Length: 272
Image (cartoon, rainbow, N blue to C red; front, side, top):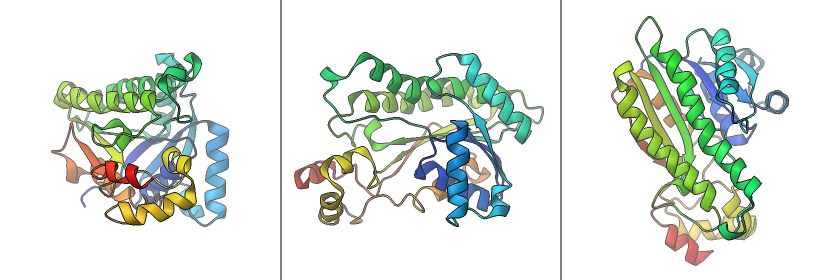
């Protein structure tokens, strides 16, 4: 894959999905800035290193910039992106992995504060980051643009819904529409905007709600690939493709990396 080595800004909550993506990007030579809760990210990164997930040499290619994803000020996001750009120089790619689902519950019982947190973290942050990163990609003297990737979930798609996540799913659906509309508006700057709708892994809220033991047993009977998403190896290749020059004619698209979970969602529900 051509020109795979990139300067990447990756948002993370210190979760295993985003940290494994960062690990693979670093392993492929990319320079990575992790953005999110600074102390949490530094602690999570050290644990990954101690566990052998990231070598000390790879760690040297990963930096951390603090940002509160619940901050509703656009200036806070712009300032954080500015710090990241000072570290990386040019920003080649944004991979926005940070999300917050909260506990599954009836939307009629969802509190106002929890709803606002879900909207801020899952939609407003995506909007602010698109603007802050997009402006810097637009203003690069080389005119090469860049790649923006939003990592979402099948709950944001019409074929992957499950109960108890109305606010979360609505926000992710909004991001998928943002991908399409933004791709039309900023393509003239050679900026590509795409999304990944990932499948569920065993530690996601929905499998946990039915119980891990039951979820592990039933997925073998209900899902085509007989397993949940493997956070260590199932997503990184798609992210690498979308930030690389190999996908230079690809924009406005959502790629499903879900093992066909979304296609058989009614079947999963009947089993669980």
